[in-house]
Image (cartoon, rainbow, N blue to C red; front, side):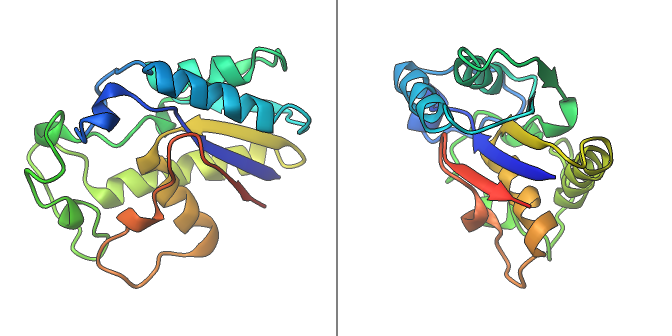
Length: 177
């Protein structure tokens, strides 16, 4: 199995540095252009399956990438962004964002999804697709937060306090085997 992972294109909340977890924000014009550029980069890349988060920004990105490929897109809730709960829509400077992304500290919040529960959800998804699609090349279109446990799944959880630096940029493509 080979996985290509990309993050959705830019949204207005990305520009404003607002935390967007389950908020269903659409791509802005730059985000649509980023998705078109990603489609060009993947034009001659053989892909068997596209799996997308159900959130609009990821689905729009997947649709743009898929315009020429015309593959069925599988929607999977397990790769929707982490639930930011009480922090949704806030600036990442309005709360301890580093602590929020600390696997070691494993902070429990009243509404936001705990990091270890989040990792378990993403790991369950990855275990599942490894079993179902052993010999396939899969494009996953998801979120920056999702890129963190995906990288950790394949490369191990680094011994650091903050995993946020593992996050990929809008429409960046990373590959895992």
